[in-house]
Image (cartoon, rainbow, N blue to C red; front, top):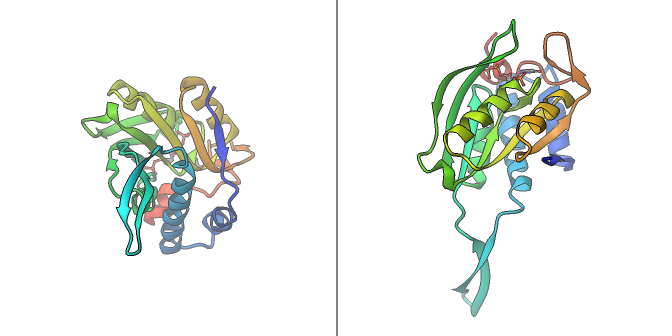
Length: 209
Ligand code: PRP
Ligand code: URA
């Protein structure tokens, strides 16, 4: 069974409050999603391996540590996942970015794929699939399945807000994928929206509706 990490860092929780607030406009919403994604990436990369190196400071030679050259990748689930990418790349600029286009059919709530472009060496990379919302879990579970079908072996899922139902679906279908979230909300409503949630993440990011 995979693990679920809920980040209770005060900065993440503070910013998430303003992301949830319906009075927050598109510009501020987008900036906050990017900032929270960056803070979450900081927490979610705690397990990256380090190796020793030797450098010269202006004062002396020092044995220090650098990242051990792990190849990373970020895979936003379009559209709303795009809002998290730049925040993560601020911290990990060398990560490659793949894209999976999925939308949730409003009637059936089933994910429909319309685009997939992933790094060619995906099997060698540690990957973070990103989407602000994990609602029924259908979109994230399908995206992870597509990534695995194309060779991905090491995947984390990072979302701002999850429902208990969505967490259970991803854990059941992908027990090897750890889940990183800023909050697990109460439940889904009758339309498959997370309650209290933040509304429609894609529409709020891009000013559509
Ligand atoms: C939203 C969200 C997730 C999905 C979550 O995307 O960004 O991808 O719904 O729902 P699920 O867990 O029930 O599958 P949406 O389908 O609205 O598309 P968009 O990102 O293009 O707005
Ligand atoms: N997609 C969203 O953007 N928000 C939800 O609450 C559920 C699915």
